[in-house]
Length: 275
Length: 346
Ligand SMILES: Nc1ncnc2c1ncn2[C@@H]1O[C@H](COP(=O)(O)OP(=O)(O)O)[C@@H](O)[C@H]1O
Ligand SMILES: [Mg+2]
Image (cartoon, rainbow over all chains, first blue to last red; front, side, top):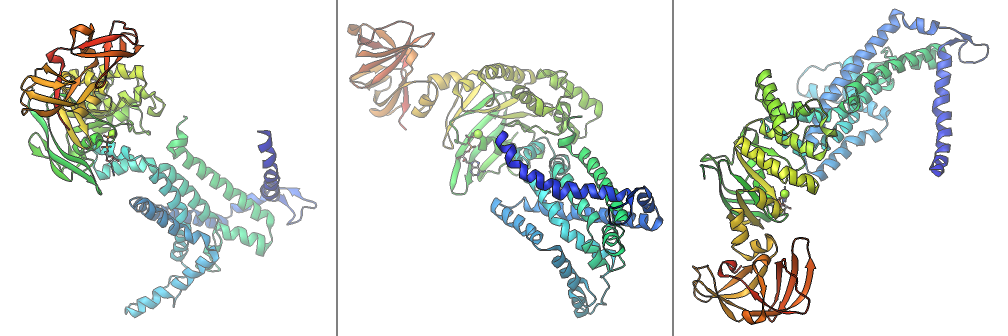
């Protein structure tokens, strides 16, 4: 055992440097004044108080709203996709899962630009609409564009865990349900769905986390004025230069995500077993 | 016995190129404990799954009370299954597992409660209601699986090697318990096993299968005493099989250079047949008093009896006896007409 512990040590040091120290800095920034220097700092809670101002609360609520909608659509499409994939032969399944993961290898920025060229006023969709004799529509810089971008971007993070859960289901449990008189719909809701819950919980946690913290997608597809909490943090650090307030918002976001994860965990039958 | 409840009529099943069932004809009666017995891969599970509705037959019919149910989906059939690995729902406790079928059928809460309690008592799991099924022992999970099926009051219960995962002692216990439960609920059990002892000790009817073909159907005593062919004889217990016997005429069979009286008839004159002699049916006697003579080759003590191999001019005979004979001793072998089982040559 001792040997392995030694092997882990460089990784531990690295983690401390790259994760723990920035985290500590963020905590310190969030409860102090004095901008982005750490000389003559003073303890304060004003950064958190500032967040209670209506404009910021609005951004916060908007982020949650967009996040929840994104998660819902990811869940809907992701579940159906994962469920359908499971119906194929094993070889076809691994190929399809590969297809689902391919977008993850491409930079978010590039994928978002692709959506811009699809949704822009003279983009692909509007070109087709005009060709069909229909009026062009405005997609860009709307909630719709942002949600489309997020759903497409985060979908694999929903599909993969659900697929993993579904494909692990012991088929004899499905047969047992049929045997006991459950038709296909009853079997799905009473057995299949319950057995896929761990995947659903993981998928929801990941996509929620991604959608409340992204800033690239709302910036590009929502436009310069579009503000979600990710953008708010970004502007505080980059444009405004108020690292203290930016850190406080990050802390609040982290707490919200932690609470969400805790709630979801409680719903996961595998983890809830002990109580 | 009673009325036919299930009839399999020339049932066949192909998986791709492979024909797994090659024409199964079988009548199953009300109240019967019927066992499908055969080596692994002979098509027992497939037969059961066709009856349950999990597989469609490639050919033939499955009649239930005279009606063809080949196209009826599993969830509409009046049969229930005890799965090989139990297949209990891990997210439900014991009570809810057992109540599953009744809840699907939208029975009233009080009805469900009463039935579940009664069935749990029947299988000896009183008070286990709230237990987590994944934390039960194999034997207890087994009982939950049986209760979950029986609570629906099926006309037929299908059991696929249900005792396979249990240790020897528990297995014996569950064998007699299953038999008791079957008598108590008074329905048909179709039981699958590859263990001949289990089949013989539990069943009213044993169906011996091999390579997708039924070899013999009969009571355990018939199957043991009157195997119809060499496969059955070899599969059911240890036997001496004489593959080169000739049926001289009715009631007279010839092998090892002698004619023997027997009780079998209906063969052609001088038809080549096979003869089975059970090891416990052969007596060791003085050399002078017997047709077949030989020398004791080995003797092994088996607890209740000795297992003796006697080497003769034509073959080695296996004999079970409670008497001791020294190795190398010259002995004679003796058996009565009713100990000789004549079978058609395969
Ligand atoms: N779904 C299936 N696909 C292909 N072959 C199968 C399938 N199920 C069973 N078989 C084959 O059919 C044969 C009989 O199987 P089975 O009925 O399970 O035998 P048993 O229960 O007597 O051991 C085996 O050779 C098995 O490999
Ligand atoms: Mg089997």
